[in-house]
Amino acid sequence: MIATRPTTFNIGQLHILEMLNRCNTEKSLKELKKALFDFYSKEVDAEADRLWESGVISGEKIEEWGKQHMRTPYIHA
Image (cartoon, rainbow, N blue to C red; front, side):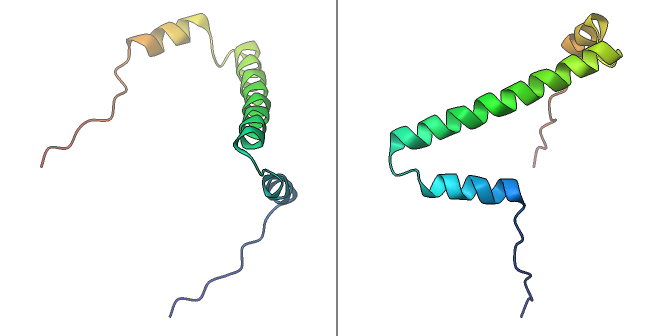
């Protein structure tokens, strides 16, 4: 028998669960998903701006990434 620990949620997770509990229609779920997407989109933009301003990302770096082949190699059986 595997012993399991109870899951402890942080305040953000608890809040999201509470919001999901109120999503009774596809429309409300869609609106909530859009709000979450918009929130994280702003977070990503802010982090990208921070990396650009600190010099971690530059135009040259982005050009370099464009020339790299970063595909996951296929494993043939």
